[in-house]
Image (cartoon, rainbow, N blue to C red; front, side, top):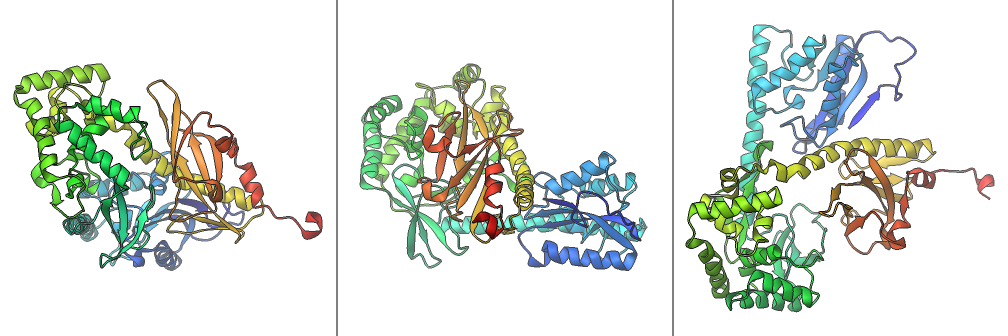
Length: 523
């Protein structure tokens, strides 16, 4: 997000310039280079010069979806300035109708322009072939353009989903961790193996693909042992106790629970099947669980590490647990789980000994969300972290902007890659800014999970740990790549000298790294 006066300062120019004061809003999504913010700004400046406007403020959202205002901090700031009478301009200049947003509801799109006009700010679409003068003709054209913009997003969503579905059917993995006993293998567009991806690593070339392959033989043997023990009569809790007694950790480096064992027993990737789209979040609408018949799948595309017959026997045991129960009996158990925990999730259900599994509820009631609704639970409470993450993503550009200002104030030079946000400081070292969400354990302790960007390989990662409410920065970690051995760090309130040696209450030390001194003084 960029918010600045056109002279680069926070104050209006002392010299009064001629022309009507105006703000420009530019938004770049990722599908068209012609919509780059530079190209939009050039067209807007040309329009301003020809029409007698002087641009006093710029609002810019780069790489942002136009479907909603969420995740578009500059647009939110624009409306906030207008609503709170902080707008020092009388016009808003936008490249075209779609740049203000590809709203799925044309009435919503019109409401945002009306919001500006009621504040005395006219809206001008600089690259359109009509004048936004309130005439019947312009109103009709705007409505058509808004509908076309929304339809473009719908068509793009369909094409993207079709493309992803096709990749699934071809046997390629679409995100997510590999799981215990499996590994992610990077292959080129012809299927030739390139390298194994470590935890947290991502592909860097668009035409590359990811498949699942068997992991270390020791892990594969443990997966097969889990299945064998289960079909021979051991319960998930028995297997959990056995694995933990042998000090075997999950793929995420954690102790086993009944739920993690159950999920391993029900995941088809262990027999080589590629299953996707169990849930969907299309066009930024509600996150929903899809019926089984809507799942996208490709069977036998990965090398299996569990025999099909063994897997089927395990599923038969899990399914049989709930067959003798009536719907009401199953719902009564689910209601008790809800009352005991205050919330529901698939993992919580699978942790309960003697209860039907989450997959049984999904099969019996046509999805977990429907089962939740029948016992009075709204899953919104289960997704509170999504809203926190959304707010932190909106905060990230502001934090980056503050860091840029601090580095430059210290006398350093810094450039920011527009695609990756990686900072190059004094042409000497690189850094990335990462915001770590704070969460609470069941015991009330604070925890932070931090993923290092192993693909970009910055020399320094500036980690911003948020406070307990995720409203303000709590402290900062300056983590050099040379000293970091893992891609994922789990931080507590006190982490020992090996990590807390890099902890700072402010970024003053980081800014000092960019400072420059005259050579005689340095000598």
